[in-house]
Image 1 (cartoon, protein in one colour):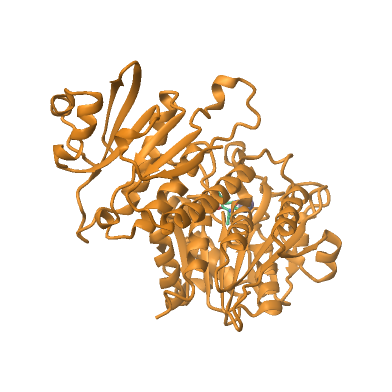
Image 2 (tube, rainbow, N blue to C red; image 1 turned 90 degrees about the vertical axis):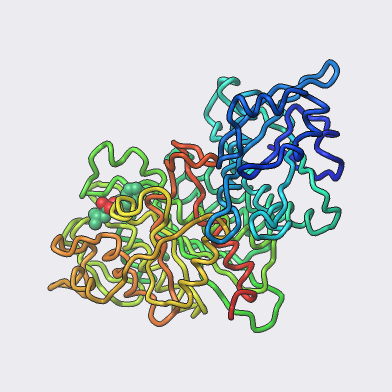
Length: 507
Ligand code: BES
Ligand code: MN
Ligand code: ZN
């Protein structure tokens, strides 16, 4: 694991393998002159020849020397300010990701980052230190638990030094918070990347239990028998085809503030989705170990919050099951009754996420009456098709809560895009035999929206936002701090931001 420290000496006085400077487009050469003087006198000439002007995410890497030591000089462009007059902080996050990638290809073990001024992003020094820390951890993540070849392990970078002239404790605080969140994101990704036989509902429930014990969170785990006896026909139904028992996991963080509000996080936890009897074609099944990304995100977000201690109560609820075909499996045509008493015809056993979430949402509403509720689910291929890998689909009938979630999305980097959620689409899930149907009628298409409207039947009047992370939870290309072929941990940064700013942003 990487260790990150802070240092107020100048960038040219750092004893590291590589120094990294982030520069806006058309930066002034005098800003990098001290580096040229110490390490590489022809720097300006080289930058001109290479046409390095600081365009967004362009890089210039030079090997300089200091006596008998070589030092990599890494310059990364931040581009120009946008409409707001500031450079987008997301560009900076990706620039930090680039720096870590460069370290990997050059076997760098120690690096110093010159932290840019917050003003460049119209933000605070705290925010810059916080995001630099989270992204340094996130970019360095690599799932290598099952790799035995040392060369393939890719974990050369050991130490990063943040160079900043801010001597204040605020920067250290930001770095500590950033480390908590970065590590939570990575733990989320690790769980998602684990092979499905190594991460069954029971394994996942055990991990939640370890978190509860470590941080003193209240924990409730219902077994498959209890789930069935409580009348959770969705969760019990989906799990019927599997030999491994389902679980319903509930973690509770209670803040020290009196009369604080409560937010519920609900996450889909299908540890493997074969489709059930409505079985998926082989290539659609390849990544279906990742179908518990929502559950992993809510459990890890509450762990981060147990450390960061916001003034709001948080509960994380994760229904966990395997969706497999067998002689005992749920059959197309079956009608299930959920925890809130509503019924649905299951026409397609591959639309299982909404079945387990229906029970979890109903449970949250009945037992906690939260002030707000947000669910995260790798729910529909339709959402992944509609928005691709860069935006999570947001569906909600509640404008004010949507605004708060959108603000948390923008500042955290887990971006969301709101889809229409009009009652018109409800006609798609009407059913002649039960209250609703678990798939939308083909005539209406809009599969992401009709899935969201299915869930709406289980939230009563609680302000609620549904996030469909099917496109954003794994295999995201081009973003430097993620790795294609691996999970992103999407949602953790957003949920932490939302809870940490709960009392601040309410206007
Ligand atoms: N877990 C899948 C959705 C999914 C697809 C997530 C691709 C990530 C990537 C979900 O359970 C599912 O199978 N949905 C079906 C619903 C359909 C049967 C109405 C889908 O999207 O095809
Ligand atoms: Mn499915
Ligand atoms: Zn699924």
